Length: 260
Image (spheres, rainbow, N blue to C red):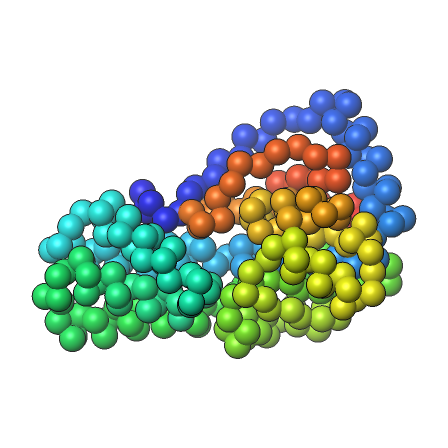
């Protein structure tokens, strides 16, 4: 298994009566209090990480003369981590790290032809279909139809790439605002609320990454809905925990409860 991503298993454990009651109370509070619902994009609205994983698997096969899959992926993870302060997140940063790692692990032996193949593999991620995940479009339409919430995309990455994916997804017109940021920390969420002229307790963040989408919002007094995706990038991996301002749903369309 690739070291730079984790595969998540959902146990589907049934909630207790007390948990269901607590969840219902929180849902009613959200319907009364929340003014803005912010949505992560990659692996929340559409599948992204599995495309990165497929490219990385192909990449490891290309570099197999110079090491095992585990070794190649481990070295790539180190280079990605080192490059983040300057390159940030997204396909272009990933592609540059692929090329840099290929030169490093091959000790400069890699051919120009193979480097071009690696570059094209990374570039192919700019063209992923961004097909909405099951239940996403119908849920967004239902929430928008209530007129109760402003709906925004709040995601990190490269602006052009993220906007292009949102347009390809067909979901663009369902949002009032699209924000693409370098990172998602407590400061970024505070700035989002300031720009929208709302208090943090009037924001609900929906996303798959506990590290980027959930914990920073809970830490400053906001609400969150965690919808885990089956694959998570290692840089985004974090153990989830319970919180009195957090809902955890197995499927995106469970958000329809906020439209009632």
